[in-house]
Image (cartoon, rainbow, N blue to C red):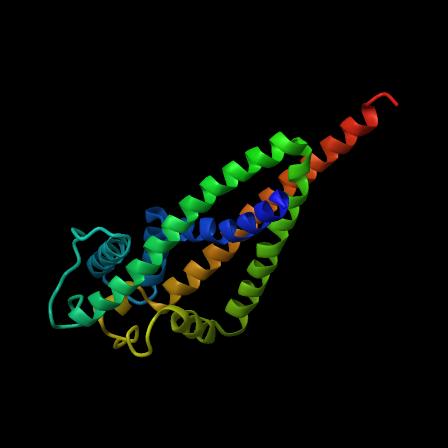
Length: 221
């Protein structure tokens, strides 16, 4: 039973760990700079929009002191409607952060329980299966991005936000700081990070399985 719980915890934790990579400052800065460069020709404007993107990231993760330009003109400021949406985003992100930390702790405890009861070799199956499940999800995510990212984007937002609360004019500051290409990049980084974490988990499981088999065969009969 402990190994089943460990498998489930790992399968849920790996996608959340990949999301934490997407939310990191270097990734937001890199994706923001690359996507904004495609839509803003002026270097000063590009720099300003990247700063806004980072401020939006910081605010969405709970920093009320983030330097977002506030005002009523959506073209040059984050309006009250945009800020309300970002507060909704904050709830999702903070819950995700809390869940990822809680799952990491739970994973560590369950691994200790499994190892203490049955030895480290018994971790192999949970590591392999727990890595395969989200790896399949990563493959499906990649297909969704390639086939129709717009539909996937709308579907994802529909899961967490009320209709109409997350749509803004194309020339608004929020959209120019976080354009379409930025979100495509986020989805790609999420899928690639999840695939990498899953392969590490599967690889670790295979190594433990091979080692366990070798030790069993080496014992005197």
